[in-house]
Picture (cartoon, protein in one colour):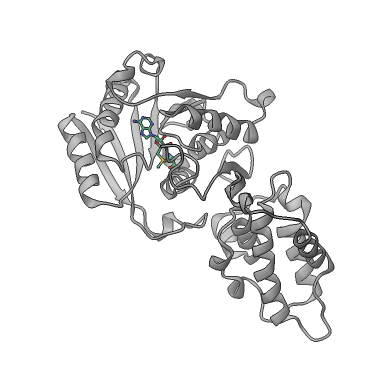
Length: 345
Ligand SMILES: C[S@@+](CC[C@H](N)C(=O)[O-])C[C@H]1O[C@@H](n2cnc3c(N)ncnc32)[C@H](O)[C@@H]1O
């Protein structure tokens, strides 16, 4: 559905757009503030707008949230609506029909393990050169760590990095349309896909895990049809460190290197720093920078990351992502996130 361009406060301040964003992101239904988003007295007009904006096929096509999730969402939504229906008002027929049809669908315990489409709604600020208003990712959220990797879901550090690009877009010293961007440890490739939608010249999403790279290709296909891709986004396997010193990414030119939630494992840090250092030194004459967003689960690990950056001769500054940098999407926790901007000496 194409919405007219709005700015951040319009999107956040509009209860139905907010509810739609939370629903499409499949935010756990018990975390959705229905009471705050539904008016104290509900009439037919409001229910029409609610249905059309949040639940109708137009609002959710072509990648609606999973059936199991929608049932739970509708149950809590209907509970709130029923408590607030004005005198002589009835529950909206479309909402009721949707709920009863989902209830009659058989579900099994394995539904919870299936990949689900998670839609991250993008704000259409007038200043953004966005191609489209959403990023759709096929995620397996129940898996924190699957088959030895953690790339089956989009982590909060990726959302914070995305918000950073969306809000700072006009402050970059060169337009993204002139940048070649490399993402390290891309996982679902949320950031790469977002950057591609921001009309970045070229984005290469990389990850060390082969199955993660296959899933990235699926996510790219979901978002950017092959016929309109113009070779501007691709995926390639890259394991950090000396073991892949001959990987083609080291001989290509990059302006920006990005990564999110890739600093959590101390045993991987020296390989990550090796790769960052090599890429930044090689692209020094292009004034390449790296922007890495790190979820600070463990202070010692992040101190070690900083120490190794300094030991490698890399300069960095860091900023904590505050509440104003976590507004666009739902963040499941308050764990601190820091953004590192890293330059070669
Ligand atoms: C916690 S996930 C973060 C994924 C994504 N950046 C995000 O924030 O949603 C870490 C990712 O780094 C990748 N990774 C871990 N160690 C790696 C290594 N040594 N080389 C390349 N990728 C690695 C994993 O496969 C996984 O996809």
